Length: 210
Image (cartoon, rainbow, N blue to C red; front, side, top):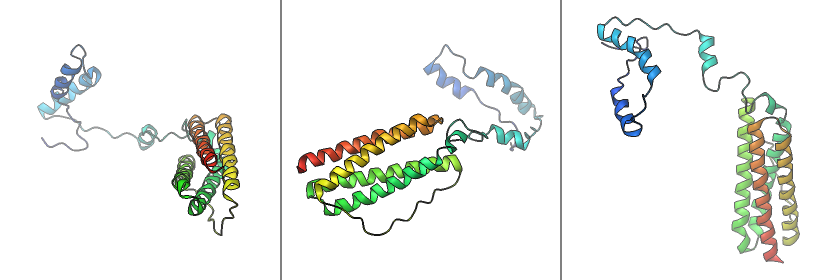
């Protein structure tokens, strides 16, 4: 008998039984599903399977994963922090440009580290923009930066960047503690710890340069 979307699928539990016998022979796999499916299998065998009524549209939407009107993560609570997220995005993108400029004029031993720092700042901005989309459903459009970046001497530039990254770490952790959204708080904490690691990398470069 040809099945359609209106015909309940009759599960053949024998193939699942074979798997469960190897994994946990003392358990009865899918007992509720097996009981519910028994009448449908009998009806299919007799050729009298009734059509399944479709659920109401509102009910179907409400039960879809991720369709909560007020999700527990990256939802209403996180909207209060959108201004903070936007500020962090712009700061990370500015840091990325600065590290790229520093890498072009840095000593050979420091260029790889500075490129890594630039990539890390870009990745942080991307994660924050993803969080922004999860919260709002809209893509964040960062400001278009242009113009030359003024860089001082090598050691003063590293000193400045160290303090920037250390302050970024502190600000991320503080924002993570203040938000009431658990997922946003975890993200901000991770970014704060990453900023402190970047500060450590800059300190190592400065140690080598002095």
